[in-house]
Image (tube, rainbow, N blue to C red; front, side):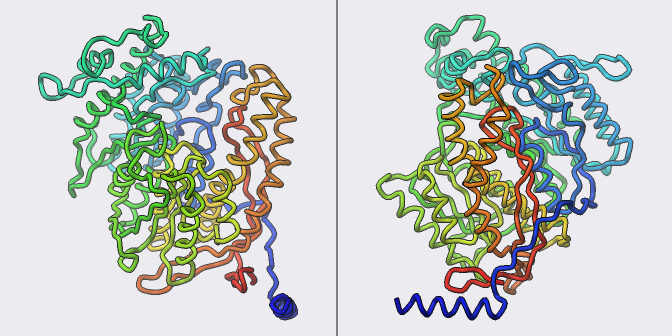
Length: 606
């Protein structure tokens, strides 16, 4: 009782002194980005390939130019088709759009080859035949002709800097697209995950023909019988032909780059949903790896192959900025909590989490160090629990470390939740109650574990480098805050609270399919309303935390960093981009940043 009286008296004094939290009101309009333009053709129209890439680019002082949304949109079965009369993107219009940007003088490009040559990631998993695009003058070009024409046009300007994004096809196609169902998915994924031979080709270097041959074989030899997995010969032939088309296009791209690319082109290949087994992807990855041979005049690699596909654009934007800003790397302290970092983070990853981390550290020129005193930033990773009974202890330890880094003497922190939902909402609740979420350089945890490492490091390294090399403006500051708010709010509030409730409601009460609101056709306005009301409740505590957080605004060498306070946050225009429950989009309105909030007895004041 005595302590309560003292606490109450202090609060009264603070309020009388005018120190209560002052929340700035979110602004209805944003200042326009004015930085150097990047012409960007997205993988598809999901939020992590569109608005979050915009946020990241603008946080680094770039302006992202993008084509019309309909030209790169993916439509699931039963949904309205695109303007081109298909479920996939308009390759002809996108090709001409890129050439228009080149004619207008653009010299920075980030281009998804899956979109430009296949109409998007999903269609690239379904297409075995050569695709043809029709240009505005009636000319028809095959996918290979599009590839040749595009690269040739972009190679003519010596000032161009081009990042080409490609992928290793995942183990099975997308359900609910082109008539592909869940039973076929399960059967083909099992077939694809079956271990393949690992012995080298007779010539020592694998060829396309070698890859096609071993893709049919068991690890110990002998052809895999489709019937073993409940598949027909036709299904397997179509599946393998689709993989062959995809690999052949990447092979042509690599061949062109080896012969013509120079230092103006980078190729970044992502390994899509995978398996820790030596799956059908194994021979493909080995083949592509042997051909990633290009190095710049300074000895740095120009091409890369890494785990993850939905984070490719994040990696490319960040690497482009690092190159242009003169980044010379940083020392990073890595801390794992949970005890399973020596395993794949989930069934869709193909290497241990520590190996995936090491590859990405090399990609971003980061050096891992053990001593926090020698580190420049810190990465905290929560893994799945080795001992489930110790779950609370694992995330308590992480939270304690994160709190110890708060303040001007601590290390800026990147937080990765690679636990794949193992801790329920307990970890997020503890973070919300005990930490300043808004102080993080970046956070990732929402999507499949195969991409959270690349996503978190892309955003965190980008921000760290910008604080050292860039010039902060109102636009870059607000764009950065959106990257943090978007990732935290969607993971804490939608993925682990609202979405679970929606899945039950759609299945049980509406008799619908959460993966496609059009098959059967259900009341989409009702689903949207339920999502909005659910998010209003679920986000309240997290938004309050962010609004009372400070964020780092400058990192002078050898000096304590500078900071500001977050302003108000308002979420509007909720949407389901693919009319499915898996992910959502939303607009994030921010108030002006404030003087740093002060922490008194765990409560933040201004």
